[in-house]
Length: 252
Ligand SMILES: [Mg+2]
Image (cartoon, rainbow, N blue to C red; front, top):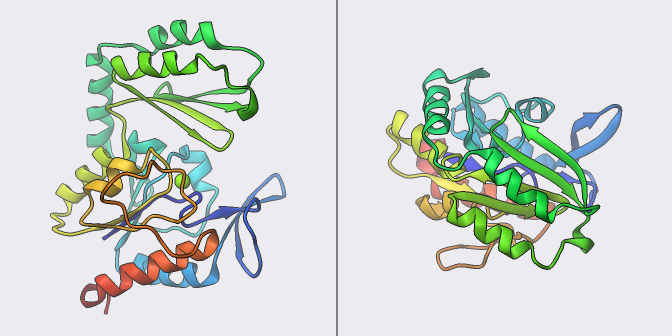
């Protein structure tokens, strides 16, 4: 199976060089994301055989805006939710619910601490179903002492990620890798391939049998990661080609 992050791994905004790509997301009439036609063609082939699982930090609404992915599984909200044939998986939902009940550091404690660092560098604040938070930030004005807050998060079993203009705070029990493990066990998968570009993808790609990371990725350069030769939208084609080569016997 192929587990992959979407934004900046398989799909790209117009901040990247867009030529003959296919528009796959619009919001209020505005073009948002594109996919290479080759990547789209290869992904559709995988979807027909239930071999592709999108793994995204997008909310359900943001995910459903991308109309082309009809997959059996979809991991969304950074692993807080799993969709099976488009419907919320109840078993995973109650697992996450119980994790919230048992967590030692409640979100309000995190937010009380974060108040000390807030300022006009926070442009927009968003609470995703009370599961995690993201902020649109002014990246040029992040306060220098923010690392103290990041340390506080770490000690309290929360994670953070800054991806372009978005900054996320997420409890550790919500992660892409945990949701991927759940699907892997459910499907009794032995070997799988994973791709992603941010630090929220890091453990997911490291635990996979094979990984391939876009060259332009923001991800920490740690041992065990393989990078594409090309960057930008072409990296997605290289990822799909590599996957198809490795899993040829399953696909054909
Ligand atoms: Mg990404």
